[in-house]
Image (cartoon, rainbow, N blue to C red; front, side, top):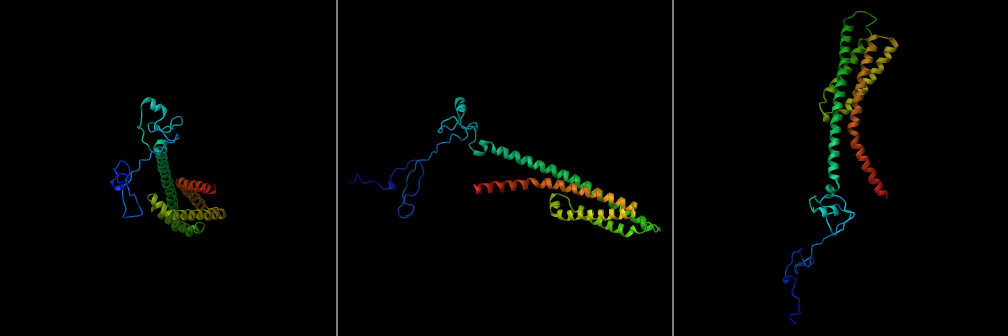
Length: 250
């Protein structure tokens, strides 16, 4: 009868495998048990461990495809889903292209930025010369533009101060509202100057309006490049949100 009684789990010989608690809920009764290691059958659509191709024509139990089995290759390719399918490499290439495109867009933005600053500086220089000429002159026909030219000069000085604060992408992101406001100020000043030039047909008004028009165009070109810089991230977020919404609907 003693031989028929089974030995407790703690006295059973251990075999290679997974060891653990026999009674997980009872802390006073513990032992060891052996679980054979599970081996999941590989899917026929899973990639080959040697070359990464799909094993559509092979047995599920074989880790390599038929061609690699004939050539004698096995386990040369790293068994990782992203690397096997080529998605990791494509992701790195896409990131490199995106960073390169952002660098090129920022270079173009800096070039447009320098051009706009030169346009505003040329407008300011013309207004300074005109203001000095008007203050030294004594004629009645050229005296009325003096207050307006001085106000335009103050406006362009403030715009140049805003432009001088920006040195890199971070400054551009923090000061873009002020830059846009400066562009609106330049646009309003140009419209007012064009109205005065249409009323009095003065050469000074027409020249100031032309210079301000060039400065406004240069500032608008800056914003077109900046929108190109910001759009890829927005498109990526919107695309992900669309995909998630379609999945929820399904």
